[in-house]
Image 1 (cartoon, rainbow, N blue to C red):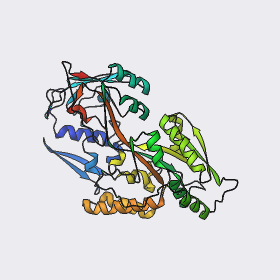
Image 2: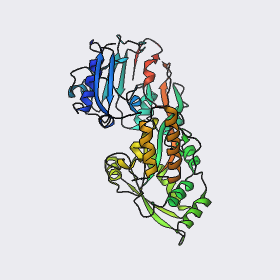
Image 3: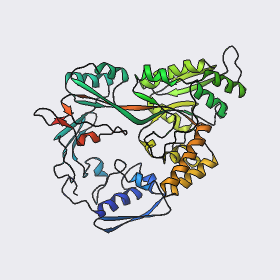
Image 4: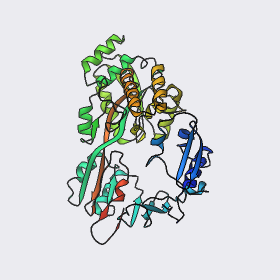
Length: 420
């Protein structure tokens, strides 16, 4: 196995990569995963790397797997971010900010060679413009970057094809559990019962999503499909709110404020949510901000309700530590709801140190059971993977992660062997 510049990839490179992460010579969000658990790395011989851990850490293999980490050549520093050197089926050629990224086939790749000689990724911020590029043939493929209405329109274009498959990207509604109203689990459960996913999926997402009742996607080995669900039931929602002591006065029980970004699909969802909550006596006030301001407020806990997505992070059950352990209150992690349950903390700690996957699965099953009862989140839907491409592109295969692995097998009809 060789790097794109011809140097052999050995254990020395692997050791350098992780030493650089641990010593913060390379900037990466992954450093926070390894530093608490990895003591040191040993290159036993050219083909063997040994990780010496401070404690048992079962998520290590996931965090070393394909797509989660990349190996850089020995001696690499910050320059690797400007001129990436890898060992995969494509090599980096160039990148121009706000314009494009170009990669070429690596003819010295150790595995099956890619069939495309060159790929150009165009930076097109506007969704409508992306669709126009497809329609006029100046782009060949758009992956998970079009609105549902546009996808519906493009299905009728004879030059284009739409691939759709189950995805793992999760939309969720989060509560601030420090809020005087939302700290009552009955209120959170009532809100969950007031949400009718079906018309939202049908009319907003155009059937390009699936209902979600769990943080983990069904494809996960640790997924528990037998946890309590909160199906649409305005009557039950009203009963829960009555039991919590919030009786309606002139049709209104209380006001809540939901902060949201300017993203179109989120704003449309929140408008529907406002109507559905009004039906059970909750007045939802909406405050919209550009994303940086919105996310800053979320991290600081300056909100009552917000909605975001998990992209990739929920594909491994270690998401529970990052999002729900009491040691991960924001900004030290993604527990932005300030959820705290000592039993959940203990189960997470045990699951992260348990090597036997069968026992880990039982622990994660119990965690999911408790979270479904405590309800720091309302899990809304998993977004389908939607890839729209010109028919001259063939051999495309979707996977649940929605990544670009399809480039390994993609090929073009005709004389050209590059696409964008």
